[in-house]
Image (tube, rainbow, N blue to C red; front, side):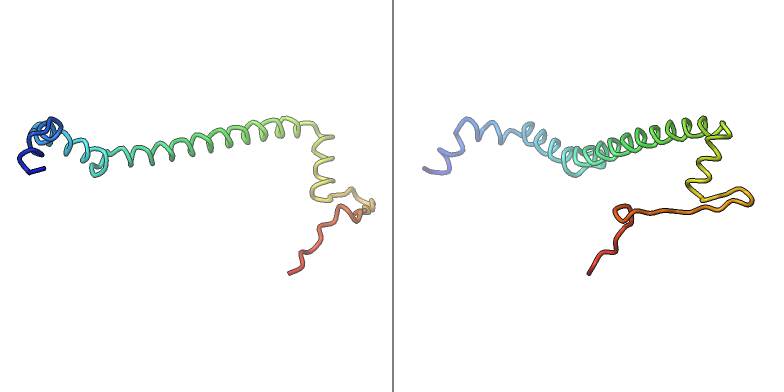
Amino acid sequence: MSFKEFKNRKWVRFISNKYVLILILFVAWMFFFDANSYLIHHELDGDINALEDNAEFYQKEIDNDKTFIKKMEDSNEMEKFAREKYYLKKENEDIYIIEHEDSIKKEEKR
């Protein structure tokens, strides 16, 4: 096959058209090299999805904290929380902390 036969094929003539070449170059530029390329948009979409997931997580945490604050308005609940979490006690009161073997964290051996 000679160069002339190759040049006269239908698809070669179509691709060698100057408008088609410009279109191919434009699409390649916009897809890979431009500041607003598809690759950058794909990366930014991933960032947006991650931020939306974070927003959902923090909204759930806010809701949990609101329910906790509402629960702490009761003085009995506040006292119970302070005793359990911070081991606070009343005057002239002794507190004994009993830990079971299965509830104690064991040190990891290296």
